[in-house]
Image: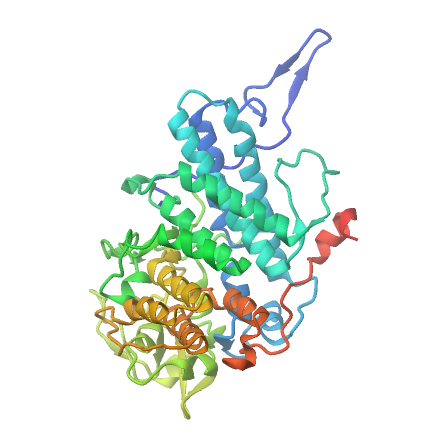
Length: 507
């Protein structure tokens, strides 16, 4: 859903200007309100487009959402003293302060998404000019609201639940029980799966499909501990997608520099991709530092290539992640660059370059006793561009088929079918560009250990492990099956200080 295909608009404000006389109130047509707008399916679509705008803003996918999951998931270490204080706090402290800005941005971004979804869902019943489009938009809003509430409940636990748009500064809610939040998420995803199409034309790529709703349902139910429901949802996805032969195709895309575009046709929205958040590389280094994500003319790039690249070097792979890879697992080189590797192998304008330690502005890391400078290749741009500052346009793959297979493997392990768990794991390991030896599993604990290992190496740097750790820790799998990658870390984040100061129902 690149910006030249869908125009992202601001959510219409909840209050408007009314010109009043003694006899009647007249709506100012130049300043529409939520009551005067949202009368057609196109206007409703504009409303849901604003939700995507927030989702890919700096508060969420363009920067801080990835940061929070990366810092708390055990896969990352500090790249050096350049790591900013709020990020270092999330990485190093078991309990972050309530004023942590990264955490606060994610809380705010999720609730902004939710409020905009609520406006769409409230207005939809009055739209009748194109009921097919209206119903699809309802499904999109339900999916996006479910995603936002899952982020909140998985990271904060009990949080306020809003199902109506906020229209007054006193519309505060207190905390809702975790079970009630999961019930709302499940209800939203169930209805979304019935309303969303199986696929889109290229112009609408980036919107959730029925497959995305079912895959998200599987993730939610797995975290909720209902393995039968998770398996049922994931089986609705099984076989509808396929693993791409080249593992790296899941993390590259359009890279633009000096008016030269290196397009990898078919890599974004490929057969393995289930849901992507879309970014665009305009080649100008622009980034929406205001974090609002608004407007068709705003930069729509992501900062993660900078944060984990060789110049800023804020984050590097942790020793724990490095040692997780089996010898000769090709996914190590697909995921991580180290001194001695060659970059620019995909460029059509620059010669290949061998990385030297002096080229990498990070501290060192240790893999199996070997000390080198290393940084993440996954979701980075150095295969094509060697730039000290390049905000990337690589789409973020939120849900992909390999994740579905490994979630199915975990369900089978939990319900006592280790051989079937092995079958799903081996589908992932047998991808042509990976081709790792198959595993044979005969016990539950062996199957769980295999799932945990495979999720680390297959899904590294994809913002899954933080949520996985919370699930596995709750089940007592640390240290009975593997060691806890983040010992002592709190499961739930503190509610942001500004929310506590504003909302009297949370004090």
